Amino acid sequence: MDDLLLEPLEAYKSRYRDAFRQNAEAYFDGLLKKSGVPEAENKKKVSAYAAKTHKIASLTGKLKKYRTLRGLLIFLSVVGVVLFIAGIVCLVQESLVAGIAMTAVGAVTPAVCIPIIMAKIRPVLKETEAERDKTQKEADALLKEAWAQMEPLNALYDDDITRKLIEQTIPLLKIDENFNMRRYDYLSGKYGFSEPLDPARSTVGILTGEILGNPFVVDRELVHTMGSETYTGTLPISWTTTHTDSEGHVHIEHHSQLLVATIVRPKPYYGEQTRLIYGNEAAPDLHFSRKPSHAERLSEDAREKKVKSGAKKLRRKQQKAVTKGGSFTELGNSEFDVLFGATDRDNEVQFRLLFTPLAQKNLVSLMTDGADGYGDDFGMRKDGPLNMVSSEHSAAWDMDTGYRRYLSYSVELARKNFVAFNCGYFRSLYFDLAPLLSIPLYQQHKPQEYIYRENYPRNLTSYETEYAVNLLGERAFASPAAATRSILKTEFLRGEGGSDKVRVTAYSYSAHERVELVPKFGGDGNMHMVPVPWTEYIPIVNSSFVSLTELRLTEREFERQMGTGPLKERLAGALDFSYGHGILCRKDGE
Image (cartoon, rainbow, N blue to C red):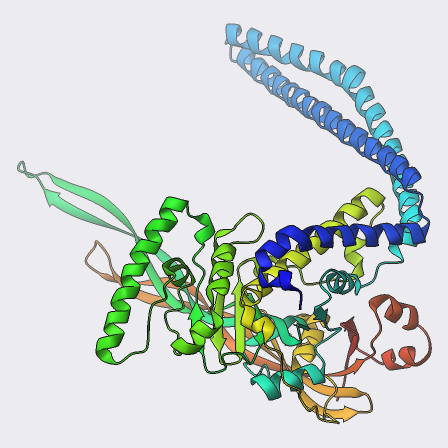
């Protein structure tokens, strides 16, 4: 075991952050050297292209300025003609002063503006447009040449680079190519991990692996919830009233009012949730949950006040537990107990077994440091041997390691993007694992040997099949009447050689415009029916079929082979297909 991992925040700051960046930079430089792309020549080409684009922007600005001026002069000329005609009308009607003034101004304005447009502005516009078009062609040619220079390097990227860099930096951290059946069997049989059966959730991102032999899953789901929408309608009304004054005169008054009515109706909402699930047999009877405290945002004084106030509440909770036969007992470390906040724990012995003084110190450091990590933006739940971590930063984590993100016409931009993406990916994953790595017992606890089944009825897990069909896209499976997003669920039907035949069910809603009449009293003393337009969402279900095959090829290898041999035959007749995590998903008929 790497002892440095026993203090994960310090390990990241003192070793892993810089080591990962150095590995990423070295990997990119190795690809660049292998490609033979001339970096100096590419830099000159890119600089020349940048100069051309800057010139184009300048010329475009000049064109905009002169076109605006031309438009103004044309407008003034039109105004002049109108004035001239109005002046003639005034002269006919014997309004001499106004007529003379208007005809004079009306005649002079276009006489001045039109020559300026023709003699000055038009030639400048023509010349500038020609120069811009010429510069644009030169810029396009330079860009094409830069892309051609970079082609050998762009051809070397693949989708397994990030995984290699992570394992190189932390050899004890292993990343799977995909969520295979052996990994699922292990998680399910040993830790009680279950299938994704909830029809309101669909896996759109998946990552699995192990650290120090203990397995983890990062699952990103598209989640459907039913909420409500407030709809508003209006109805203008008017009426008259009469009254007689003291002198016997009758007065009529006109009144108006805008009646407003609202109704609340159900509406589906969709969002994504990302969580890390980690299996470890330590403290198997313990359950608790906690929410982010964002202690990193507090000053030392504010944090001290929060801890003092929280400690009083914990003391009262302990006293209440004593009188009512509960088991809650506060820890000696009030700062940890308050900030971590796992007050619903149900096994004090195992809680203390996990959260030793070193674990408490690690977690306090993690929760209060917002400079190197993300601070306390994570929730955590322990359900026996399964641990769930949900962080706010993981919501913005780009989990797609596909090679296309690296493609560029510039060595400098490619290097910057390559290093930035991979460092960001590593940081996000590391700090989702960090709360678990902060607990030394988890690292010291080695999983007992597990006996795997020799054969599995299916080749792929439901998590991977859901990811595959979502990669293909919701539109490929949604009903034509769908007006909302679709939750895609998969059902294994049968094995066909090395492939799985799967039914895909798309759950969505059709939308129907309705109008509801809502009674409202008006100022006229009458009841009025105010029309309120609203949308009714009706559940709809659509079924399709796909075949999924694990090819164990990288994206590049797949693209090179897809036009020939057995792979070409597999794709024959496919209505549509996707490829990711080494798995080919092809949509076809039953």
